[in-house]
Length: 100
Image (cartoon, rainbow, N blue to C red; front, side, top):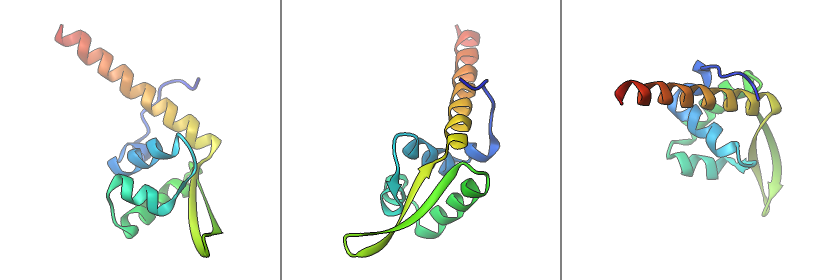
């Protein structure tokens, strides 16, 4: 497992939600959009940032008679997301210990 690292690119709420959805499996653009409740343009902007960082792969393929956009996490994206989540968990643990 990658050492815990807080990743500011992933941490933005929309990108964090996208990574959470895609950490489980490849997903169609519209499904991700509807799941995180954003517009096409907002999702596109976040996906572009994640793609430029090498965290998300985008592919276009026909599905049910139309061209669809599919999103998936790359290996680097999965590692970065896992490290980010581990760092958030570490911070939660520190907080819990301080409030006891």
